Image 1 (tube, one colour):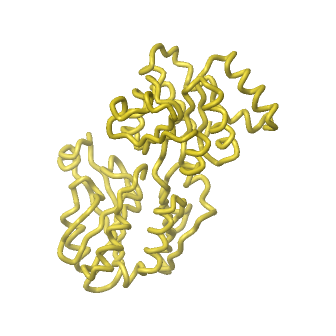
Image 2 (cartoon, one colour):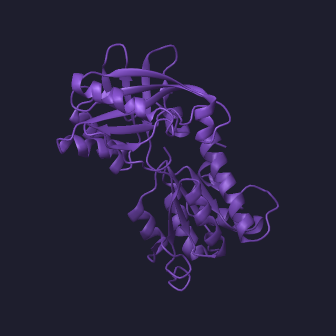
Image 3 (spheres, one colour):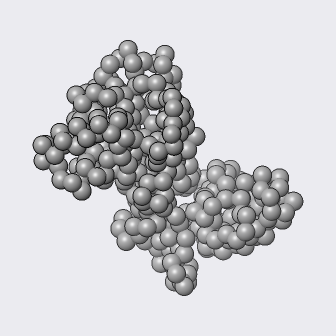
Length: 322
């Protein structure tokens, strides 16, 4: 999921509060299923719910089955066909089929393992929750699923009954430079599922009036980036045109695992940037990670179109690794 849905966190809280909790996870889909594999719903013993496995098509039946699974203390696998009529009601052109795994917390998915998963999510550590549906064995992996982590794709291992649920940190966009492009880029990023942060020590630029409700940091960019941290679910975009502001953050990015680094400027400006970084000791492969001039070459004109080009390139790198 691109942003935290809070479902594992809610399941743990309800369990610890003595309310009982069952975690429902979409483990397989066919056709135009309303929710993607890995989507989750948590159900309490009193019938409270958070999340969704079908957008409303089969939630009622899942709740009934979850209550029974909680009483029995056993996992269940459910399969539902979503009719064309029900699919249309949730905005799909045609129906499909989904399979859902029910796991009572405590009896099936242990409190300790769920707490471990929640802790990893809070610490922005990508982990995979792996369950063998035949043996019932469960574990949490921090490595070994590189393609799934990159694509944010849960699913079964080939020709097996081993399901891998990917729990990635939320996507995050860090923008250095509270400029006009940033004003267009931030709302686009939010729509695409990113948690944006704006860094600009110039408080006149990075003001609440220009960016209402957004996270604004007025520290020097390298200090701010150090405090935030850069990881494989973070994109860094540099928009100030000022090497004094851009370069310190850029050097931090090149030493990190962030998935995207973009820097505004013409081809000539970027050539000067490459020369500075080479002099600072960065190699050709490191410098090649920088997308400069930033954004796909769409012939963009004006801040809004440049922001579209940036979002398009970020998406391409995230989803295709290119």
